[in-house]
Image 1 (cartoon, rainbow, N blue to C red):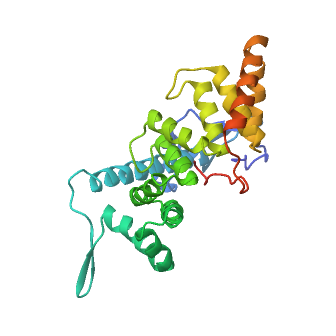
Image 2: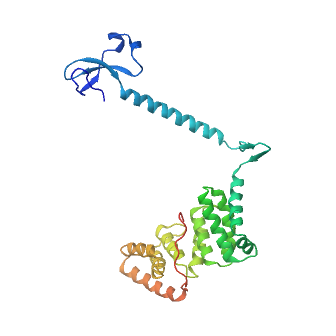
Image 3: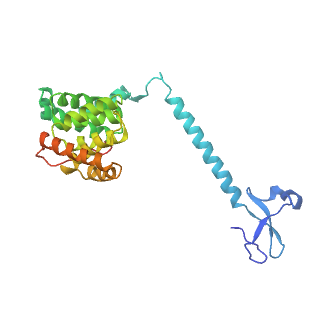
Length: 279
């Protein structure tokens, strides 16, 4: 903040009189300007901090623009991958290298798990797929999700209920494969028919939002009611929100349908586990 050297007041403003008209502008450093004190009328030269900030912001903006331009140029489609020369060998880094590195890292950590997955054990296939999912997020490498999908799909096709739910979540989010609400619904339904409460919750939300299915609040209530009865607290909250949107007759029908399905669907014995972060 500029202050008047004559009276010490900070109530000053830039003078409208040019700096060069009072004295030679070259005798003062850069960013010095002529100011006038509103209190005593004294004119004086001082550093213009507002001008310094203005130039600083302009320079920062220029740096950001140049950086963004360089990034776009280096990431043009069809551009040759970057080569890192390390003396005798040159290592080419592309997206597939990182994807396989994530998979190989998971394999090295637990070779027995990988061997069991290769032998067709559904639990091992599911666990290997989930390990790759976690590593993919840690490495910020979405392409590694392609390997994860392959293992999770193999387990899901063997009726591994957690894998069926996860495959539905992958289709719903569109990670590692094309987003497809219809297939997400199909896999959620298969998992729900085996008693998976998280899949029941997702079915309820799909019916409530009309995502992949025709919107049906009564059906949404049924699935959320079933999930809540199996310990899903989020499903319980969503079910209670729907209760006020249904007529008394529709609510009664939904609860009767819930009771009938509850007798048909199994209850899983293991504790309810939350899906991985982001799913």
